[in-house]
Image (tube, rainbow, N blue to C red; front, side):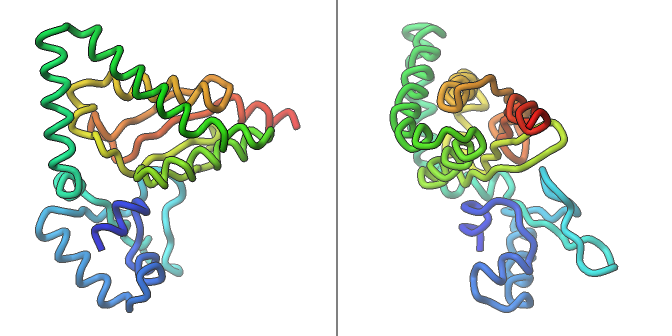
Length: 211
């Protein structure tokens, strides 16, 4: 259950029941257990997009992993990465951390450039990037908003590291802009406590409006 929330992002019990092939009653029982243990939280809306509605009654509750719930999957990687960056920062200064972040971002570009560049349609390129990031464990999706299309990452393997070293998020944002060939704007990050890493691509809104 927790893995489904990690991979797919916030979801209602009904949505998880379809994905897992279980009855909504069984899913709700497991979700309530996760909430009681502090691994998930329930709300009336998603961190982004439309509020799910259940008939004419109250909106269906949306379940999201808490910081503690996500950390269960990443504790070893987080601790190792944080120790490594602490060492770099202490012995070689902030520039070494910034250079590492840029090197990591360049690697991201190289891994995805072929797939993203296979289409000339900017919206398709955004979708391809989201799919590629999902394969790497970021549980990424796209969302249409009034401000423009957004890239939403529901999971961050280095969330605790990014909290201390936001240079990782800054370099990643630059990489997204390079891959999409346009300016992007990071609106929220899991590393600083937001529910979803959200990147706005305002230029795509302009193109749709002028089309």
